[in-house]
Length: 615
Image (tube, rainbow, N blue to C red; front, side):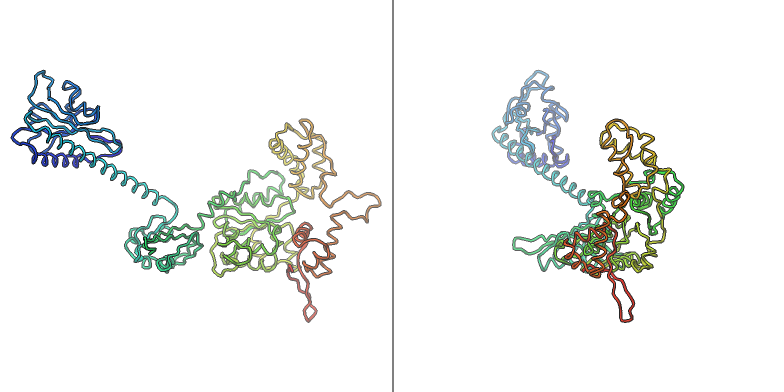
């Protein structure tokens, strides 16, 4: 007897058949031989009773397991009719020997869980047997087998669902714990044990408080009835500190009483990895992307490669546009942290009041407009990888002090919070200013300078590696032509001489931008010349006779800013009001002209002191 969904076991079917035979014996005349049997959907005998006289009687008739009512006897017959038509049938049993046997055969179809006819229960008996009673017994037997099949199918389906759920629970990356009203652990999956450093098999059946070294907050849900979703939780044990995103859901009965709590959690580091994949926080460039054969440049590449294998802080110095972030990404991709995030932050691109929260994050409700659940900072997001702090010279003094502590303690404290959070991050800094001169002028903290200055790589300006200009220009030409879909293949010698002779105040970035411009404007397959006026750096006009005293707009703007800031002692509010611009606009112009926001105060002894301010 087969079923596509599921069937009872052979032993269970045998037991059922033996039980039916036993019940039938109480209703039938036992003086007449009777043989019960089961046939499959192909009308083959699949089973005969193991007890009683049925087996011996059927054997005398030449019927055993495998006997076919379609091929071994003339058909149609009651068995094949019951299968083909789906209703009980009865008739004379005729063996293929060609002579009638004075016996009657009665058959009733057994239905499967899908309401199809999967088998037949039949009985061969003496013609004198009460056929009405026998037919009733067989119909009841068929219904019993059908119900048995349905129950077996449901049981197997339930077992399959349980197995699937078990596989899901054990293979999800989230930890899962289920507690009952007595705080006893009813279930704990493998990820939960791994995250909490607990053996799940040892925890099940014990109170959660006795399993963990700290008081779990989820037990209070049994009293409050209120769960939580995606709560930022830090748990400290004797061996380590665990930073989790935690969710707990109370399961209540019809009276609103909490009967159990389902707790799921995930280490925040794994969430950060997923977030970085989605946000694209990864390094694209490797050392193979660094173009140049100049000795000064190759010395920087060699030092950067050597630096990649360690974890020391690195300071990349050099003029703007020399490729400091490309070097930072290459160092990250060559390091053991290459599988972790690469997070870049331009310290000059954010208003002063946002820098601290961007770097270190903030707690829920720490300031007006803050995200409800708080937010991790760049250091937390970069944990396990590298953080690149570009234009670090623009950090305010108070933020410099906090950054120094993070570098020393390897911990961050979010704005508005007091809990330290461990971070494992390598710091690469960059500056286009001379930080040592800024230290001497009291514009940069000396202790922070020496903390980020463990290894310094000073990138040469493009005018100091003129032998690389032709190779760089050709590389950018191929890249831009491919991106723009233009068939521009070469730079004419005269145009290349223009590039080599130019001083490139904007360095590699300026060269790439102007190659892109030339490809855009090219009318055939080559670049024949460059308009030198278009590749001058902003604020660097070509002097003309009699124009020595004429300032460019950029120079005039910078002079106005310096004058106003000095006049109002670097008070941003008053300066912006006098200049007629908003505070954000004033900040943007200060950054544009590389001005330092510091006020000068004079103490009682007449000594000047500088400190950062944004008021």
